[in-house]
Amino acid sequence: MLNPQPVPSYLIQSEAVRTRFERLKARETILEVRHLGKRFATPQGECTVLNDISFKTHRREFVCVIGPSGCGKSTLIRILAGLEWPTSGQVLLDGEPVDGPGADRGMVFQGYTLFPWLTVKKNVMFGLKMNGLSRGQAEREALQWLDLVGLSKFADVYPHQLSGGMKQRVAIARALANRPRILLMDEPFGALDAQTRAKMQAYLLDIWRNIDITIVFITHDLDEAILLADRILVLKANPGEVEELIEVPVPRPREASQITSFEFRATKARLEALIHPPTGGDDGDAVRPQIVRMTDVTDDVE
Amino acid sequence: MSMTADRRTDWFAVRRELSVRHKWMLGIGSFVLPIILWCLASYVPFVWHPQMLITNPGSVDYFQVGMRVDKGTFQDELADARAKHAALPMGVPANPVYLPAPHEVLHACYTAFATPPASRDGAWLHQSIWHSIQVIFWGFVISSAIGVPLGIVGGTFSAVARLQEPFLEFFRYLPAPAFGALMVAILGIYDAPKIAIIVIGTFFQQVLIVANTTRKLDYALFEAAMTLGTNKLRLLTHVAIPGILPDLYRDQRILLGWAWTYLIVAELIGTTSGITWYITQQARYEHFDNVYAAIMMIGVIGLGTDIVLAFVGRKLFPWDRALKA
Image 1 (spheres, rainbow over the protein chains, first blue to last red):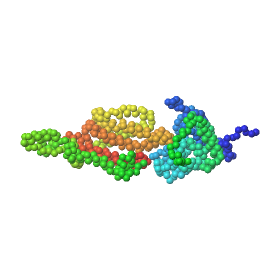
Image 2: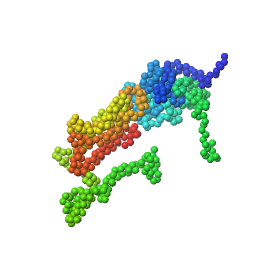
Image 3: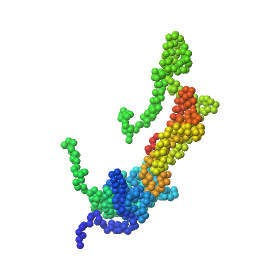
Image 4: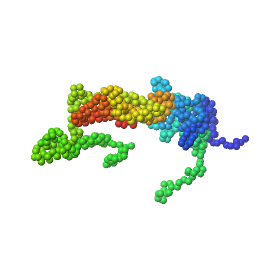
């Protein structure tokens, strides 16, 4: 019997990809978000930032959260980190409800929040010392992590002497040194230039490949999301709701050259349709303003 | 970002960074200009000089050598003496006794230290200055010992701030010298009430300023520490305090200058002592050159301390690029 409706192109998965996803789903659930909602009162009435968000993340999965601006991505990740509280719903980490920030959920922020009064090594040691390790042990572990991110030469340097990419690597090392169950990243590469961002993406995939860590990554860059993620959680704005949870069909290991592959383009088309739907007759941009020609008629640039 | 200068130096280019030479030129000029004005007023006879210094009393019976009279009075007596064909009084234009010439003040700076105290159990000038420094030191230390911790805790935990700040804001407006008599009644007449006045004058500003500085610390640093598993107490000791240290140091320097300004008023409470005693003594005998010398010494000690502390501060906090002077 013929299938009356064709499978959308972004859902076609090759054999390798399908087995990989089966393996992923066989792992235990690390993070479960149940009917999460966040409302707060504004002078204009009540504003619903997040509405009925539910999803599950498995161990060692790489999830990207993507959506238009103002859809509550940052609020979601801050609730997962415990820095904000939801008005309804629950977040369960390994089955236990989340109650405030803690070392089991590491976080990397967009604005490199390294402690400026500590050297790079002491920054990485911070979490370890807070959780009871002795100074010598903390120092040894910190140096190992710095070696992993390739910054062991900069151990005794202050953060203000580092470039943006290096600062983020230190931030990642600092968060990972604590051995969290899950690493939350709030647009960590947003402030970096394109080349550094590409390098950092490769670094991050390398770290994720070799360490037992689950990553929830927020971004607004579609290419970045498809390059990095196993699954992409697409949110929509006003109020923030789950639009779709897409399994990325692009095979691993991922590299920049896959940007022209069929799966990549299909996924990207789907994401663009979800996030930037073509607006018909919107009153805002209905009539594109025509600029009056102010240069000489013969002086053309195109 | 520094603007490159034109061939002709543009002194009024907005926010321009000065070259080292210009910085030194203008910095020295800042002191030299008032001194030049002072010299003009002291040494050029037709600038001000509203009085006449009598060098020869002539026939006027109430004139004495070294006395100062108004020019008007002198002219009257001169005209009188001329009319009577008596010996004419003579004098040179002079400034009033309360504006000595720069060289007189300079001389006084030296002689003040070399002159033994007027009364047998009085103090030498350097002893007076040392006494004043000690009073300031203890006042500031006691104020900081209570004020800085309260400020840091208030800046970190909003409930604490809301509990203490309304009262402190009110108390800030009560003038410290008004507590003089009260402090004498409680603490006696020697050094204790002076130290108390300095504490009262400094403490309330200190708590509010330190709390404000603590509040300016980037909240993201606290969030980062929380996601690394830091408990509330450690947020205070391992994030708030190290984070604000450069700004706290700068605040303390400014507050030390503030405490200095309470010195004179504090030393008048109870028995006058220290450099204030010296100043009031000399003013009573109209030795204003000594008064100027003493006031300038206070200024030099205060400014000198500030410069040394600024230098030390630059070395102590290598990570703080904003710490300039």
